[in-house]
Amino acid sequence: MSECIFCKIIEGEIPAERVYEDEDVVAFLDANPLAEGHTLVVPREHVERVSDLDPDLAGRYFRPVPEIAGAVQEAVGADGATMAWNEGSAAGQEVPHAHLHIVPRWDSDRHGPIHALFQAQGEVEVDEAGLAQSVRAELQAARA
Ligand SMILES: [Zn+2]
Image 1 (cartoon, protein in one colour):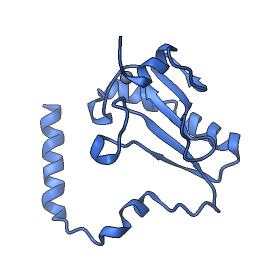
Image 2 (cartoon, protein in one colour):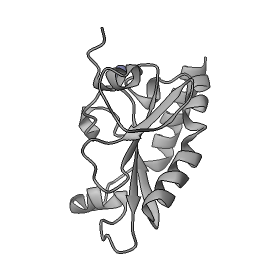
Image 3 (tube, rainbow, N blue to C red):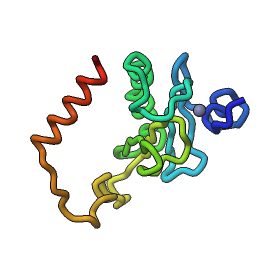
Image 4 (cartoon, rainbow, N blue to C red):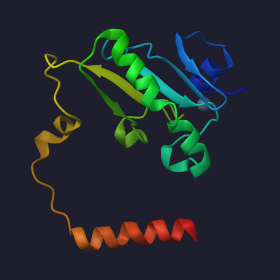
C-alpha cells in the first residue's frame, strides 16, 4: 500500500472533490485552498518530480491542463490563474507526487506574480552564456 496521500486520493481511499479524470490524469480540489477553485492536477502514476516524467507521460499529463484550467476559471468567475509546480522540498513541495497547482486569480486580489516570491533578494548575478551552455549540455546528456 502506498503511503502517498495523492495515490490514496487517486485510488479512492481518501475522499476528494474530483473535477476531472482520464486514464493518466486526475484533478481534484485542494483540501487547503489558497483561493476558491484551487485545483491540483496529478498523474495517476506515482512520479515525484516533473523532471522525472518520461516525455510520453508528460505529454499525456499536460494534454487536459488547458481545458481544466479554463473550466476552473469559468466556474469561479476568475480573471486569470497562477499555475505552478513546486519541485522538491527546496521549492516547498510537501507531497512527493508531482502536482500542478491551478490557483484562480482576480484583478482585485493583489497577490502579484510568482516573481513576488523573490522580491526580497534583489538582483541575481548570472553568467548567462555559461549557464545556457550548461543547460544545453545537460539536455544533450539526458537524451544520449
Ligand atoms: Zn503518489
